[in-house]
Image (tube, rainbow, N blue to C red; front, top):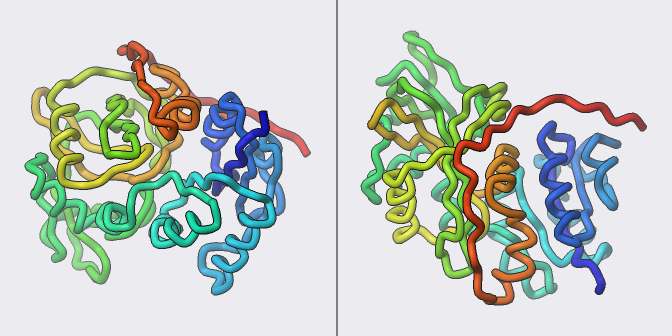
Length: 298
């Protein structure tokens, strides 16, 4: 059987190996990309293509040409800076027989903006830290940002253009990895404690179960249309739960949730898009992940 071709981004990331491995285990041909001449993810992929950076005015003409030339069946976006553009082009690419594994444009527009995300949480009844467009709180972060980039904690005055200030939380940081089907139904909701985080990336995590968290996410999904993988972050302090942000895309730390359940891409391509009956695997609560660096030479 001919392999479906998938196109992925930012394979120079230190956490791209787990994604590539899951895709290849799903009998998919992986075409990876990044702005560097070569990288570790390139070495692991079936094919690598160097692309311009996200600020290049011709980026999308070049990308669409690459997708057509390489007969790509599916794009799996993971780079925050391009999520809005991918979502805006879902219908255009569909006409070219190229699918995008991503939530609809309206959802992406809300959850790539931390101020709109805050308001979405409030609307859905999810507990969330107090947040303002003014410099009211000492924790300040960009409205459109990823990881820990641009976050500062300061009592000083600061220019708040395209920034928010937010109540600082105590407790343990968690992420909830979720997979939704084509109709917005939750297939998996798997929380994990982020025991150790470096530059926004989870280095040590542990799967746990919390019914309240699961119910909150189902409430949110009643108001917003999610498709495919997303992850939601927050803090838990004893019985108090607060959600801080939502990333409407795959995330590197999802490797632990895949290990605790099953290969989500095999499930997506073999069952979900074919509307086949799904029988969820038993989740391995308590499963813990540690990350380490591994070298590739080229």
